[in-house]
Image 1 (spheres, rainbow, N blue to C red):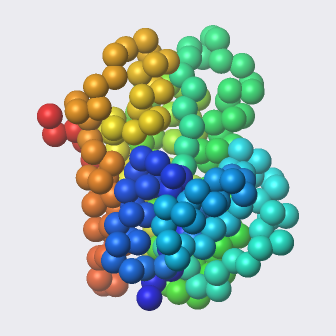
Image 2 (cartoon, one colour):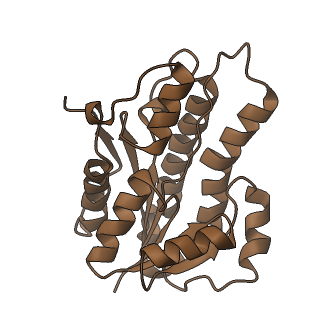
Image 3 (cartoon, rainbow, N blue to C red):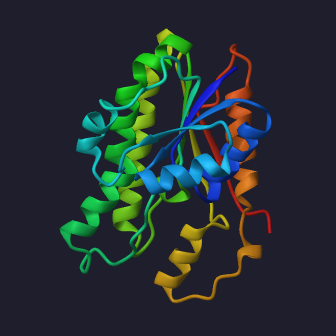
Length: 229
C-alpha cells in the first residue's frame, strides 16, 4: 500500500488529492501546523497519520520532526499548501516577501530535504502544486509569483538530481481554482468571487493523480491546467 505525505490537505486542491487517495485505501501522512489542526485532519481522514510542523517557520521543521516518527518509505510527497499576498512591488515590504517565500518555497525545499531518504527508498514521487503565476507574473503578483517561479526552479533542480535514483518530480500549474485561497485573492483584488467560474479542485487533483499513477517507464515533468469555461 502506497504512503503519501500531503501538505495543505485541509482545503482546496490538497483536500481533493487527500480525499481521492484516502478513498482508494492508500496510507496518508498529513502535515498540520499545530496539534489542533492535526486532530481535525485525523478526524476528516480516519486512519491517516499526522505530522505537526509549521510551514511558516521552515527552519523549525527539522526540530519539530525530531520528536515525531517520520515514515520510512514515502511513495509520494504532495506540496499543496501555500499563501498569497498581492500588492505592487512599490508597496510590499520585506515581511510580505518573506512570508510568501517561506511558506511557498523554503518550506517545500526543507520538507523535501527531510523526506528524501524515504522518497529514495520507495523510488517515490514529489508533486509540487505550483500556479500559473509560476510561469508568468502580472502586476501586483510579484512576491507570490517570485515564490512560485522559485518553486519551479526547485522542482527542476530536484528532478535532475534524483532522476538516476528513480525519484520522479512533477510540477502542476493550475489556473484560477475554486478554493479558499481564490476567494482571498478576489477579496484582495476587490472583485466579486464566483466559484463556478473557475476550475474545481478535484479537476486539478485528477491531473496530479494522473502523474502519480503513470507507469514507471514514463514521467510527467510539467502539467498546466486552465479553466475550461
